[in-house]
Image (cartoon, rainbow, N blue to C red; front, side, top):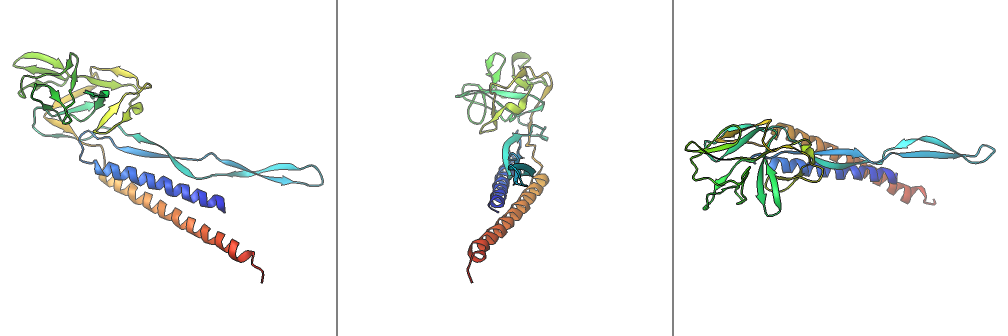
Length: 254
């Protein structure tokens, strides 16, 4: 009975965390380049149940079966599917079609993003809205003005002159990228860079990539998570009431 309470409680906690993930996804539905999170649930290790048999001899442990001790959120996996590309007609907005990521220099080092909403600062540097320089193959990208042409390979051209080429980093195992704030990702020790030239990617100037969140799907998952949460809550209450009766009524002398 006590074990059942813990099993129901673990289900409550797992669904609560799943609802938080869904809420965060919905909050970022209009964030350019945002990649949704998905909670991956797993079960606790199964516990073997045994019984002791003393049929006129030494005690023998016999297997009865196994019992599951509940569920938990193992991790929040990032889903890197392509978001919808929409036109903004702004010359410093860029969308990546394919597997590439823009490289940005932050105070903590190089970070990667799918959000191509860039600006030109007072020094002529191409920067993110946070003021972080966008990296090219020659270093931080500097442009003479907003009237530049960027081809599908990320090459920046001004008045027929090549200026730089955007880094479009592609990774063999993007699932190892660590998500950070501001739509940035950090490459960790396990992350393997396939190339930085965007061989499988194309850049679209004057466009942005929207989030890859399907509102209908997220709302459906939120309703399902709530129903499962509600079912676990009722099971927990029923077991608590049954335990109370066992303590207060079964052992009462009449």
